[in-house]
Amino acid sequence: MTSEKQQTDLHKQLLTPSLLLLAELLGSQNFRFVGGAVRDAILERPIHDIDLATSLMPEDVMQLVEEAGYKSIPTGLSHGTITAVVKGETFEITTLRKDLVTDGRRAEVAFTDDWVEDAARRDFTMNALSLSVDGVLYDPFGGVGHCQQGKIRFVGMADRRIQEDYLRILRLFRFQGQLGRQPLKKEDLIAVAQNHQGIKNMSGERLWQEFAKILVSPGVAQVLPLMIETQVLSAFLDSPFDIEKLLNLATLETTHSATSPLSRLALLLTLEPNRMKSAAKRLKLSRKEKDSLLAFAVTPNDNIYHDLVFDGGEIALRRLLIQAACTGSLNSDSLTIVQNWKQPSLPVTGKDLRDQGLDEGKEIGEALRRLQNWWIARSCTPDRQACLDFLRTDLFSN
Image (cartoon, rainbow, N blue to C red; front, side, top):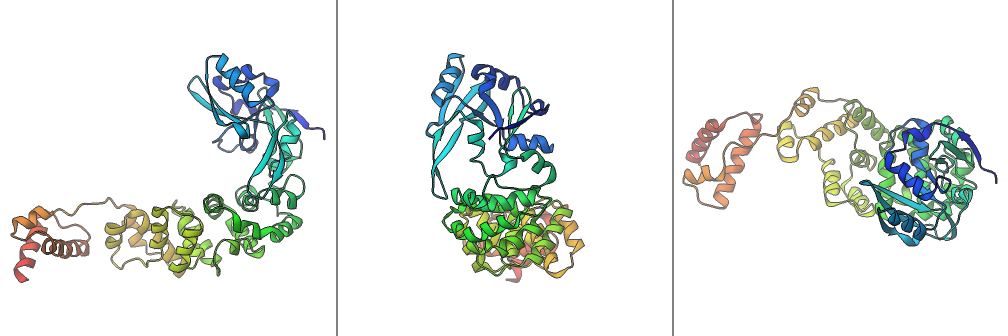
C-alpha cells in the first residue's frame, strides 16, 4: 500500500526546540509525530500528549540520545518505548511495530521499519496519521478526510480490529461522542454487537477511563442508545438504564459548568444504590469516587445548608442538578446559595464546652451536635457570641 502524503504547516503546532534537537539526533527521516497529536492538530483542538515514533530500534535510540549527552530511560523497552530527556523536556519515543499475536487485551509485537505497517495496527483512520518534522503529512487510510468529515472509521475490517483489543469498542463510541458528525457504519455496529461479550474480560480501570469520557462527551445522546442497542452497556453495567434523565442532567450541567461523569453514571443507573455499588466495584472506582457516586443517590435536604456543611459545595450542587433532572424544576434559591457558598467554621469548639463545665466525650459531642443543628438551621450565620448564648440556654434547659 502506498502512503498518501501532503505538505502542511501542522508541524508548527507541535515543534519545540528540544524536539528539533531530538529529530536531528535520530535523523528527521526516521522520526515522526503520530496518533492523537496529529489528529488534534488537523482539527485545531488542544494538543495534550505528543506521541513520537521512529523506525530505529530502541537500543539505537538510547545510544544516540546518550551519546549526545542527554538522558534516556528504558520505559517500556520490550514494547519499543524509551523516554528521552532533552533540555529538561521529556519525550516518549516508540519504535514502529507490527502485531504478531493478539488476544483481545494485549498484543505480542515485532519491530519494523515500515511506517504503513505500523499505521495498519492502529484503531481508527484518524489515529493512523503521521507527520514529519518538516510538515509532511502521511495518510495511508484516508484519515484526513475522515477527520474533516467527522467520520469515525476503523482501519481495515472492524471485526479484526475489535478482536485485537476489545476496548476498541468503547473507543469507537468515545470518539463518536467527541468527534463524530456522521453516523457510524452499520457494518461496524454489527461487528460491535457480535463481539460485545469481549468487554466482560476488560479491566475495570480501562473501562472507566473510556466510559467516563463517553458520559461527558458532546454526543452522549446519540452514543448511549447505540451502546444499549449493541448490548455493550449491559456487558459491564446492570440494566435498566435511564437515558432520558441523564440527558436532562447533561443539559443542566453544561448550563451551569458542572460536568461530571459520576453524577451522570448515578442517573444512568436510576440512582439505585445497589446497582451503583455494583458499578463501582466493576469499574474499580476509587474510594472517593464510590462515596461521591453513592452521595448522589441522596435527595437534597430541605435546608440546603445541611448538605453544604456536611457534604460540601460540589456534592450539594450536583444533588440539586440531579433533582432538577428528575423533576423538571430547579430550586433557584438553593442554587444561588450553593454557587456563592464559602465553607464557614462552627465558631465554637470543644474547649468552649469544657469551659461551660461539660465532661469530655459523649456529653461534649452531643452538645456540639445540637449546636451545629441549631447553627445550620439559621443558615450558618450566628456568630460566636450567639452560639455561646444558645449553649448556655440549651445546657440550662437540659
